[in-house]
Image (tube, rainbow, N blue to C red; front, side, top):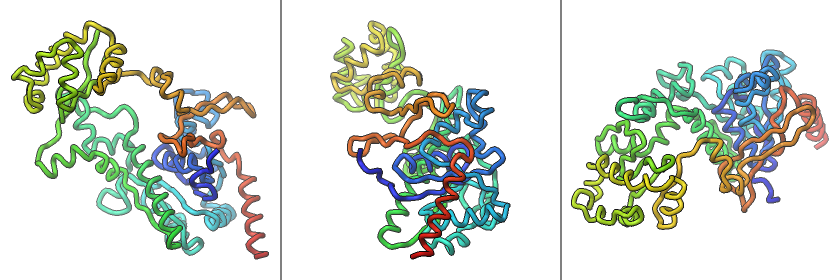
Length: 394
């Protein structure tokens, strides 16, 4: 197997729940030695979160399992003097540290960036928070739904009748984790060239606004305030979800040639030359009228058949599937998106999802199961002692 991209790097993960753990999970998938530093009393809150009450009671909630494979866990009480020293010894061996406490918490514990870089001058320190390390909102508690609402995402999700709506998964937390991982890897790249560490101030609000590229840009540059449009695409028509003879189908015939091909494939070639729909702007203005005509034709066959026919003609189209349905598709299975750990040490068979890319044709998969709370404490402390001995002899 190809050597892992971050092989040989050590990351300390002091994070909880989602944004921070997801950031560190991306680094673990790429081969970094990610050590999850957890409080002895319960550890990561996500250990108690998930759909299975039994797993939650075991401290291995499904929410925790989703983004902690490949990591090792050590329990340290950062208010205990002995554990404080162990933590500082760990920092001396680390290449990067990720935390998602509220701003100021690490300083109050005595482990702010200025303190830690004395021990490890080239440390890459990544602080993920709701709003960033400064500004009038810095001390506000921030969960995903709070950021979704503040960022404007909810205002454009749903229809004019149903908005604002929350996106159906923690998108702001996830974006914060992805931006954090990207920033850490970028800082490590600079360090490899200059020997210089970095303090990375990751704001979930800013990550989310950055990812809202088109709606934000349309307002900033064109003065057009984004509006909720349901499943319709503001940039083109026909582009959205359509009712077929069986099931819903997303169609994105955004280009003129795609629209012409669509009209031909559904047996209504005259629509491409209809004065009401000839031009893109007219199609957007009359999208409701056009959609009704297309759906009348789509009623003759199921979504799966239209998907095959449209894609064969170069017309972007895809069924609207449930999560169980897409996970059973050959496309997902064939590219090995999921990694399954067999039953071991009393733990049940477990399947987790990797990152969204391949490396030299190989999937970056986690090297080990998600750790039980403090599972590798003795192992990691022994490594610290061994590394100290090596430094002394050197």
